[in-house]
Length: 119
Image 1 (cartoon, helix red, strand yellow):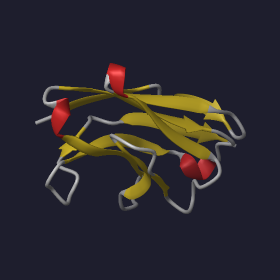
Image 2: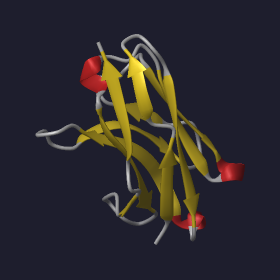
Image 3: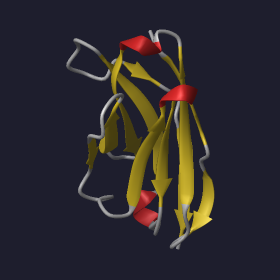
């Protein structure tokens, strides 16, 4: 199992930027893809963005396309989520997750980091 630790959450105002980090440890050789998800109170978990561990493929949810950017640093086993032009609707707990090679679903999850955007 890959262990994940998120950081970088906090309280910001609408229009501000924030960068989240997710550090992976353990069998990182098994990572195929890393993703960010979020869950707001009373809502279902929502896909935010993902990036393949090798290559340049990235994917974004419709609600963050053009505002958020996912990137990775393989040397540090870390994935980042740069969030710009934040909106109150972006308020949620953000989770980092790993999809391992040979598996279809995201199986390893971090503990989450709270992002709160005030209007």
